[in-house]
Length: 254
Image (cartoon, rainbow, N blue to C red; front, side, top):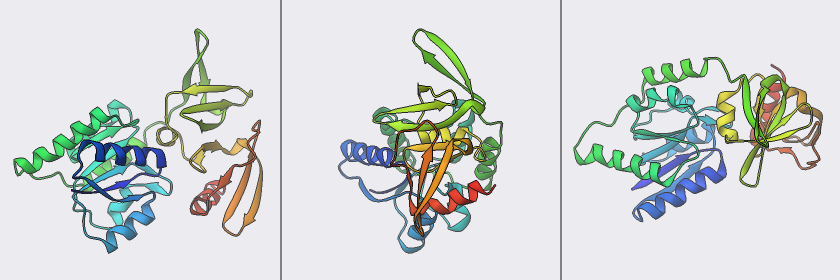
């Protein structure tokens, strides 16, 4: 079985690919794609795979933009960080969904559901206008306004307007507040990008999701690469890759 993974978080994509190979040695991951643009290019020049794993939020837009550009005939299993109340559309309009972080148990169940369709010769749900409308409606709902964080034995509420940026370090995700405090949170950066207002926060690379207020300096290294300095941060190696520079500049100008 040939599988394509569309996911811009490298570790998540590699984890899914590794788990798939462990679960079924007959599965071949023929491509891992990290953007809407590259996905459209791939589908325009390759035969359809047997199955697609597709993240909702990619670096250059929603993965649903792919369906606007090319006809996707292969069944899809979505990868998402949406909360439970917002996932109902996936159950109806796709083979299945995987909630981040993806577990081996959930991946096995999704594959079993996929095989069920073909064993019983059922029609695999088609990704159509209804799904796109439903998801866009979900995304237009009020964005997350605060985060509950743990401080020792206490729970503290941090308002979004008091957050400068989010970052990943080793296997954790952290929130950095305007009062120069760091708090560990139980979200991936990809999940946070779906929960937060994209006018306020932007994913600049695999490690940082930042607000406008966090930026203290921007340095042009070449015509297609930028270096960013963030308030309170000692990290002197924060770069925006050439693939993300365009969308970053658009975000700054909004």
